[in-house]
Amino acid sequence: MPMPTTRKVRRPHDAEPQGSAIGLLFLAGCPLFLLVFHGSPAGILAAATLLALLGGALSLIRKGQLVQQAYDAAEVAYRPRIPYKILGSALIGLLAAILALSQFDTLLMPLGLGVLAMLLSIAAFGADPRRDKGTDNPEVVLRKLAADQIAATERALERIVQDIDTLDDAELTSRTDAVRVAVARLLRALSSNPAELRSLRKPLVKFLQMLQSEVDQLSEHWADERRARARKRYLSRLSAIARAFEARARKQRDLIAGDAFEFETDLLLDRMPHETAA
Image 1: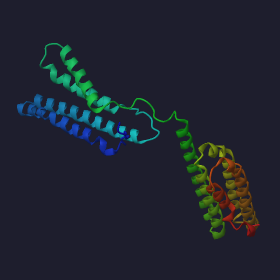
Image 2 (image 1 turned 90 degrees about the horizontal axis):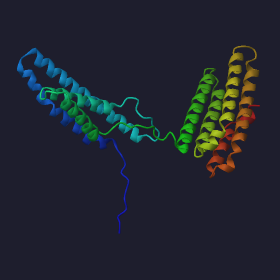
Image 3 (image 1 turned 60 degrees about the vertical axis):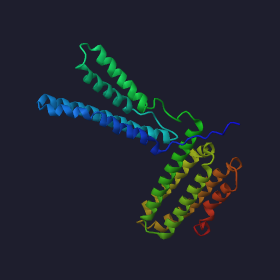
Image 4 (image 1 turned 120 degrees about the vertical axis):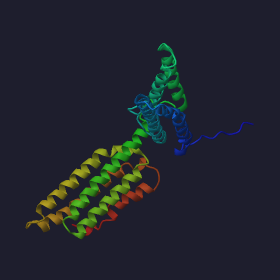
């Protein structure tokens, strides 16, 4: 009976053997230090140049490994703009070709050895990712769009609460923050169905625009004789705008499974003592 197979999960420490291989490859270049003991300026310069070439190659490969780890761990990722591992392997091939020049009379063999060294390096450390990952998966794209929508809404609501807080009115701040918390929780409840959350994009934008407009009007009249009227209007409009958005969100109830969504939508105005606002 065949044994069940398990899928290996890639973890950051999976790259440690390759990191060790890089260290061993650097040690393999240590004989280049022998050129220094020739005592001639040319030998010292040659050793420094070759060691710098080797160090640059290994540094590029290590950078490519880190990029690869981040790429593998991400659900959605774009291919690297710079192929670090291939560039590092190319430098190793160049180094091998330069070292082989003194051993052959023609360029053909050094070039062949350089290409071989480059290919062996790519075989050992792998090539860089060559395509985008997850960007063609509609489900993943919708989840990302939903997360971006929720984050942008939360930032906009936080700015509105901060604007109200500058007026130094505890009730206004408390009531506005209650709406912020309720709307954020409602959107997170809807996030289990990104397609339906996306259908609320236009109502949500309108909700934020109307709320910001009311905040601007309140701030405009806060320092004059219309302050009391503007304050009463804001509280009333805050309640009305929240109710309108809640009504639109409730139209999605039948498409969302579970009672959590109903609970979250009830939070919108049940958390607000709107009866006293009017």
